[in-house]
Image (cartoon, rainbow, N blue to C red):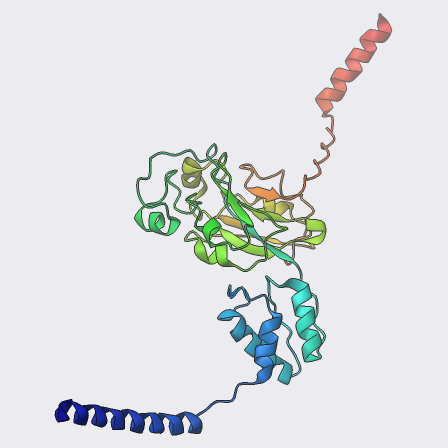
Length: 305
């Protein structure tokens, strides 16, 4: 073999060996010891790495749990996909009692069905909500409503959401939903919200995100909230779960008692619920003076005859 090649190989080998030795000592000096509990807690988690807990993956959440445990409190930390069973297992491992979190589910805040918000144009482009959102307001003209292309469905790893072909809107299956928030992040229109499932699974929400004034909103969707305030006035004074802002009503899930009084007074039926509201009793008709006179005249004629 050519002596020059041998010399080159020897030189490169020496450089590689020197670099390896340097890296070895540097790695040893700056080595960061990871708490072994992090790996053990990570194994207790579902491994979905969905980000629903607010941390970058199960490893990040496990690290947060360990830090919280060292401070004696992991309140506020919750794993939506794992649910109560997972958090109980984590609490048992860490020797802390975990308070049961109120069950939640995703809710679709749009009522623009194909009937109530008919198409005015045809979209000819990539079947992605994110792309369509960047290109135009939507086939029905509402810049706030569902685009119906199913980005939320593609994002869900639990088959907890599907597109209804009849309405053109996504439908959430609460019993499958883990509240991981993947669908929330996937929707460019922000029409999906994680809300409490409510006592006995009773939920009430405003299925609209349109902040335009009533007349403008109604041109594109007959189910749009017009900000009339009737629901606000109907909500019991002791509850006051409804607010009106930017021409749009919002029901606070932390305050709402799911009495259903706001549902029948909504003129556009923009308020939806998981239960059938009790129909209000008809108000008694108070007879006027004229009515009383007419009644008395009829009675007099009847006696005379």
